[in-house]
Image (tube, rainbow, N blue to C red; front, side, top):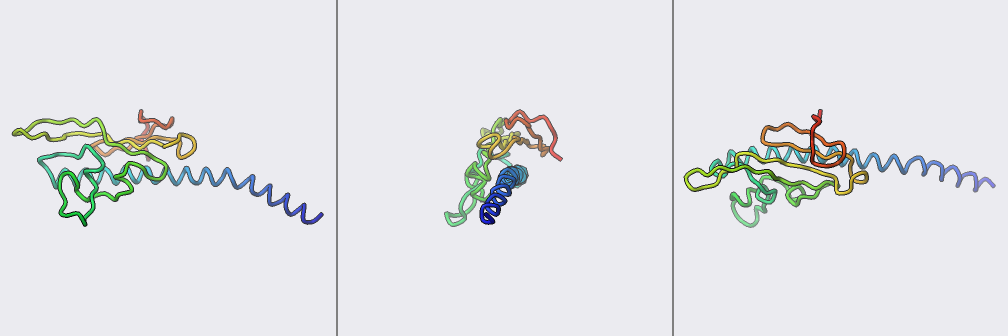
Length: 153
């Protein structure tokens, strides 16, 4: 009888703990996504100052690269870690889009961009989407998409 009571108590504690673990994971993914957006912004600023003729990078892979393959270049600047440049990190998908360019002396220069981070599965890996641009303001979309309107504090 005592064993049944102990098992019942353990089952009740597990039922209480399982939803808490899920919300903790989503919160950790949310914080990771915000930090990843900030890291991409900083990498874009460094890329733009390192390669001023190119402007900003319009692909995550341009911000990455392996130092073992040779020197940094505009197509592999070796600024960001591979986990972010893959486009997938901590339950979020990251992309750079909406690149605007101008042509200067026959060379295209990217003058603006948007970076987005959206949950791989809304409600499971995260609840909010995050966006930013060359101005550095991070906004969120509480529905998990890329229609970001609310400032992230």
